[in-house]
Length: 232
Image (cartoon, rainbow, N blue to C red; front, side, top):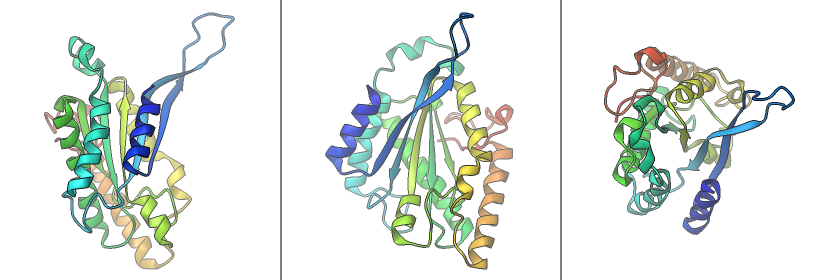
């Protein structure tokens, strides 16, 4: 299974990567059968570690090599996808994240540029550009406290999210925008950190209104999604 293969790659390459299946409750097909969770995609969250120089969106040589192996797994077994309508093909959303150090606008731009760099690797590995979306979340979605180096390292990450079709992609982006799970850690204790969080959140929201989940081929095709990720 793909989760196992990605975990194997992470172990071999020394990547700090968390992989999980994305599931939704299946529709009740028979009256006597209860709803069962159905896998609709997967999420791989990878810490940047030493993949990028500080403040840069250019992958190191080792970072590029490691991420190419990951991208090749996302590109595998797509032969049957070309026969499907575009909105029914598997989509990959790349989301870049930073810690709260530095200015909010810089973090927003850096996270977006790094997400785009990862998207380019996916395209080079064989994922069609029209099926790749990217988004920069800056420091607005922490999964650990930014008050410690270990926590900041966990927050500097990229998420590769593959879902079965465009409708599920829209659902994912919408849910992440409103998710309360990122409120647990904040971005620090000082007033400057709170201002940075507010600025980053505003920037991300503005991008979402424009096109937060835009396919690689056109920034305008996502307007109907009311989401935000930019074109490759």
